[in-house]
Image (cartoon, rainbow, N blue to C red):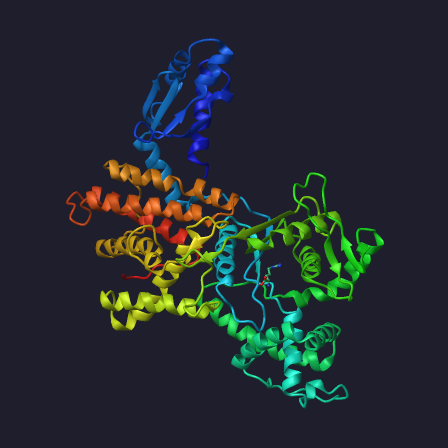
Length: 583
Ligand code: ARG
């Protein structure tokens, strides 16, 4: 569906033309004085310079030419503004179209286009911690938004499963249990199906090995060798790696499922490995890769750089590939498999330079064609109330499952205390409210900014929070349930000023979702539904709905709040959570 601003801008342009002026002056904007009008056009002021006459004269002439059926107010005011309010008929008609069109008539801007969203990015064998939360939450939301706009969308978790952490675990295991068959170079039999460690042992092995590496140079060297041998296919190490992957992934899947975060593709850095040799050979042959202090690098500095952008390192002097290498090789794979229009990465903003280097190298070497868009969304830090990166009470990094559990326990206590639902519903309802609190608490902030994690505030049922949005939806659902069959009632003309405000808010769905998509900003969706929920609640407080005796009027109220509910539900689905039946 065409957006309202576009429709009335067109009408305004025609009115300028009909009055004898250039149609280009007929641009309409949302009013910056909502107390006076809903939309406005300032074109007469600019036109006055060209036509050398008083702006108000032009504004008056243009206002004459507008179709009075579309507007309940057309006001030409000094010095030459044209102030507008939409007519009831226009709004009714527009909302009825939104109600009956697929996806509320939002235009499918992504039809025929493919985007790969790279988010999550957990590292195998290391527990997920809160640093991975934002990538998961923001990435999932943006991915859903792309899907909504009709893009063919592939969310790829891009596991960190190939680096030194693997070598560290193998080396540490070798110190502890050198007798295991995995370390016997002459062994030719089958390797055991069961891993020689549990997931909790694995989670203890990694930090122990990482700490040892810092103090013990010989051990660090062993870990490097183990990494190198793993990557070069030493069978025992491959078998161990399989065990680590299986245990670690099962654990990860559980947590991502809990978060309602789902990836279409579970590839990792290791899957990029087969693409590396040919890619590097090509880069050397074409002269993009050059040698520098024993390493192979791609210079990516540009003249216009204000800060130094160091070369992108491809192969280190010890012959090993690094983070940038796997990212470039992954691009080769993604271009081959999906021919995407866009590659989109969501990570901590401290990786901004890495992506700048990789993007430049990819374009320079022709791995990614000029027209393919590359975007890195770097998000800020989740801080504690002290303004420092969020920590456990003991000062350590908080594991993601602990954070989720703490939020869930906090919400459950409220649900139980306020006797919100039957005992059998407590868990399911708690989970939905906790997710809303956690995700909205994060997503309502501009992604690039740091924010303070505040459980009390995020889980409050009032204020700009996820639970408040859920509460609004649940309230509408309960009215609809009491009313009866509401699904097919047509939209009516606004019955009062609160209805009209709600209708105007509903019309802004499309522009807000487009804005969120264009600026990679789920916070725009949050701000929109907060405004919409506010309009719903005002309307509800000022209007007798269920006790209204005029049945036709009542049907109109019901149709309006039902549309608002459907839109709110669609929007929270885009944010990655859903509403319970009761709250
Ligand atoms: N595993 C990485 C980390 O923990 C994040 C991966 C992000 N994605 C990428 N294609 N580099 O920092």
